[in-house]
Image 1 (cartoon, rainbow, N blue to C red):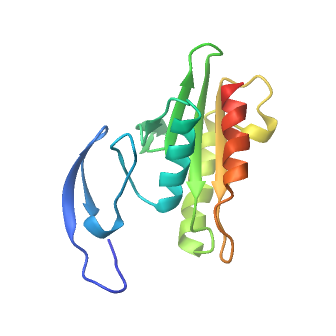
Image 2: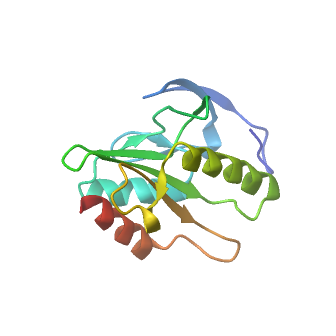
Length: 150
């Protein structure tokens, strides 16, 4: 918990995955009354909700023997496909990028296939990104949500 302009103010928040301590300055509430970590996650959550894509925010998942929390888990009962949607907003930070590389390897080792090459996979990884100098591309978010909708 860091804040460049004010001291962090941790508060305990009850979420679908249990109690968490979050900085009260970094909370964003969706129209479904969920707390998400970033404005980009808020935008993705709102788009998924508006398009009728049911999701669970930060549902625990064991990958490689370690507990992980995908940003969004979408289970499509009709097709039997589970989508794990990860938004990567800080890839310009080397430590963040390294943590993501490790987590991505764990997804792949568990047989989760990237959406671009998922042909028939039962577990699919969706990755959205932001980079320094670029923002969130909502047309790309919608395109990916349409893949989930089939």
